[in-house]
Length: 122
Image (cartoon, rainbow, N blue to C red; front, side, top):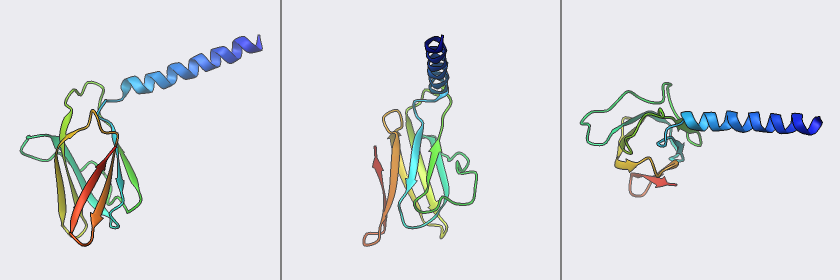
């Protein structure tokens, strides 16, 4: 009987995990801020839309060393997205045509000598 209960619990846990995965969009990804500075805004919009959607942070800043998980609805089919980040001093960086169907994590870094913010894709 204990084996049956254990197997039933394991099956229920597997169903729960699969249900969560079924609700996730294939574009879900994590942004890791390794720039050395807080990010005040992050905007993500479909590529070539010509405008930015609302700030996805929904809070004041994403501090250096912090990460933010961005989730899409399961029904979302678009893979190509643009992203813009803004520092608290107003400086911005933009990436176009990010294939979020193939990216699970973006690590943002700022190069002090060039003044360029880069995104490492994983």
